[in-house]
Image (cartoon, rainbow, N blue to C red; front, side, top):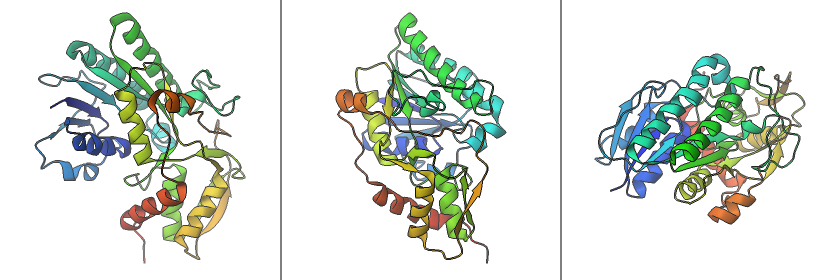
Amino acid sequence: MKKILITGAAGFLGSHLCDRFIREGYHVMGMDNLLTGNLNNIQHLFPLKEFEFYYHDVTKFVHVPGDLDYILHFASPASPIDYLKMPIQTLKVGALGTHNLLGLALAKKARILVASTSEVYGDPMVHPQSEEYWGNVNPVGPRGVYDEAKRFLEAITMAYHNFHGVETRIIRIFNTYGPRMRVEDGRALPAFFSQAIRGEGLTVFGDGSQTRSFCYVDDLVEGIYRLLLSNYHLPVNIGNPDEITVKQLAEETLALVQNPKAKIIYKELPVDDPKIRQPNITKAREILGWEPKVPRSEGLVKTYEYFKEVVKVED
């Protein structure tokens, strides 16, 4: 049985990855310090002999006993509300955490896939964004702690690949959604669902004309699985190129939830908020044979079913 370590295992993406690799017949070691993760996301896995959990902060030395075949490094605050609140932890997990896990991969002769992000492109001057674009990032702006943590993560990963011969994979994740997103996540879709269900104003920043491209979590997990098992070591975009405006997403949420009390409200655009975001997924199509399958209409319904269960509505 192949053994895989998944950091950030109790988070949104990490928990779905634990599920997938258990289904694929792996022994999964989940690791999380629960800074933003939630054990409820993996509670169903604890009775399984194929799963074990380590409560640990990856910015400290990381050790796991025995052989190890693969590592997925998904530990990090990942929403603006988190990394603005925890800027130093965000930088540390991208830098020290990645360093520790690359060291573990080297010691165990394991293949490691690190989670980077479309945020490495910053507020892009090129559209859509391909892996060859170097980005337009403000390193000293409020979002710089996340953007630069991930850019460093990519750089040190390539250094370990080139200098030590570690088998590395780099995924650049674009906006992803689905069940197990945190209600107070701060990103557009959880905010819209929570606000609509509670009958509050749906907060759209600016005039809502900024665009995003939303990928359903099952599609993303499939892309990660294929990339890990591929022979390609340079960054690969995984996301859904179906680009929409934030205002359009708010309108689709209202149409789905149908709470007459909920309306769109507008607030000032945050500093360095990207105006456009759309992945060029040519590499994913050609190298991995991957493209998203779940249409937004279907993914939003599945996500709404989850939020209906977890959002508390005051009488």
